[in-house]
Image (cartoon, rainbow, N blue to C red; front, side, top):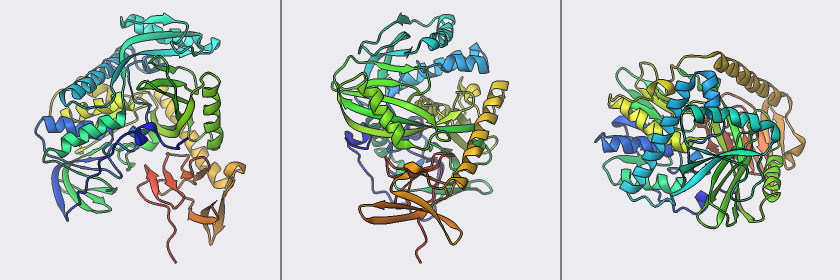
Length: 487
């Protein structure tokens, strides 16, 4: 069993060797080369715009490569949530946006001949609990009112036990990493540059442009598009206060079964899909990073849930983070009067919303009308539900920050501990007779880190930054390592 996503292990990654030159200038800079950034680049390329892209690691190897790779509008109880927070019209607009994103993905695959194991399969939303049947029926109200075709079901094709569900045709699954590698190749064949292994630390506003400071040099740009999983700056949109992080656990097994894409409405969510003819992907145990610190327990529970219903051998297991907004709608678009654009908070549906964000942001830059601007706008109106969720989630994050300061060593750390040396908290991990020491404070907003015994990482429970046992940053929002200074 490999502790890596199936996409990373079964996709050929082509690295580039582009190196930043001193004082590079561009009209448009895209920071982040996951599905959102590459989709934006493709849209701009098709409109003959010149740009530069930078990526901390390799294109698509972040959250995109840890996703389940679904292209569907059937997204749990999202339409009931949006209707309650805003209204039916907003929920229907969101549905249309997801359909358009699915169509865009299909058209890109056909137009550019991208080999990404794309398959049309039915989608199911379902519950396996009697007390949640009414919850599904509330979601069903939206589909009835919107006149969307569906079928009621009481079983899944793979015989997974359910109580009640809805089936939708003409949705899809694909390999998200192969898809992004295909778009990367198209962009690289143009005159636009992608710089991998380049970490952006800061964006400074100048008189008529932005100074973007990276670990490999400075880039000057008139417009900056931030499509990193988590925007690395706080002001002026205050993303950490408008969102929270959910961690999910995923496995892929060697198993032949009927091809489906399915997800529950319950918490923790259960997600299922197939890959090719002989793999089955199963995800569950999603939770706020502020709620659970025993990651080994969550991985073990995932495997038990899978084994209770399926027999295939588990070949891959991994985790992923999702940014959840307080109203179930992503933030996509321009920041006030600045020439900075962001796309974040995809609420577990990064494949459709990542593709969609490329179109919304490029249209904004090209001064084209986009009918989805208003619902994804960073300036959308507050609702009472949104405000209450904001207060609840921010309180949870603040409580977590305090708790991690008080409780240094959890009993499940096993080979790791936190000690105070000369007034500084140091994380220590022992592996194969060797000691690894790091700073135990996240550089992002100074939360204390929790050791992830299963994946051998130091994780931030506040906003999801992750670091390896040597102190190298794996994923943000932090862009800095936690290595100790050499003395």
